[in-house]
Image (tube, rainbow, N blue to C red; front, top):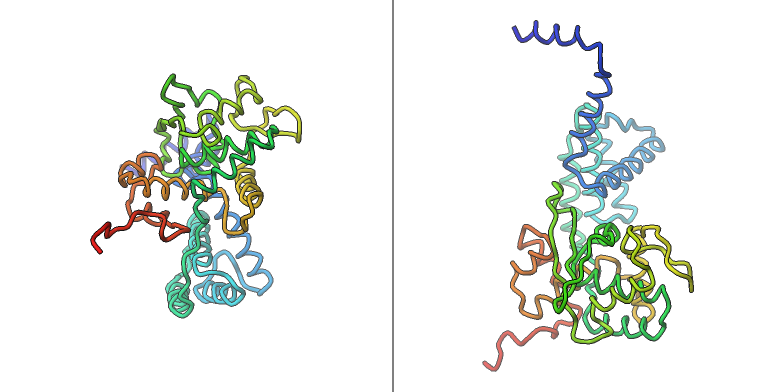
Length: 327
């Protein structure tokens, strides 16, 4: 009975463009559960694998377990970290599933990764957290410089750290997403994020700071005096010594702002990046005795273990003495 119904349905698919509709359904199935950055990263990793296979005279799609093992071993020997190789294996498997072909058995590749990890004893890398003291130096310098670029840098650093937003979410904010609340601060509306794929959104309250230079609310107001109140992106491009445009910033600009800012105060910029703002929020909030649930409410994390990874203090003596006056 079901077979007959299927045939009848096919016979009457003559009106709308059914093939196009089916194609769109397939695209939605493949992409709905992945963040945009994940999709972009998978595509980049697949191109890397396909190029290696072409050079090695191997077939990329479908691939074999032996090809996957050789690829991983070659890349690790070439200097890749284990975590990078892990990401590529996941991307290769995803491409095979998307193409509807069997996923190569990754058992040998994963075993090789495990042996490599034990041999190297790699320490997970993460961007250093910006400390409040470093942020204060950055903001003081921005205030002295007093240019549109400096004003934008101060506002993005302070709002990025106080909201713990990723660079992609920070540049996605529009002017309509911020609302100043008298005597309280500014309410920031985040429409969606990496941990909120369904787009439920959340509202983050950013309070006034104790010092004028490092107050995120005042810094945002100073930036908006230059940007103006025209609808559009909150953070926009700036031509040096000129008024801001209405062109939205790309996430990589936040990365550049953080690196340039730490370099300007005499730090080595290599271990810092846009994620230093998010790590800085978690670390600073922890040292201020904010409980983990309070931190997670802002960051959007759903696992305590993930938050703990951010608690990386540059200064091991920054927190209170856990023994107090016991000894």
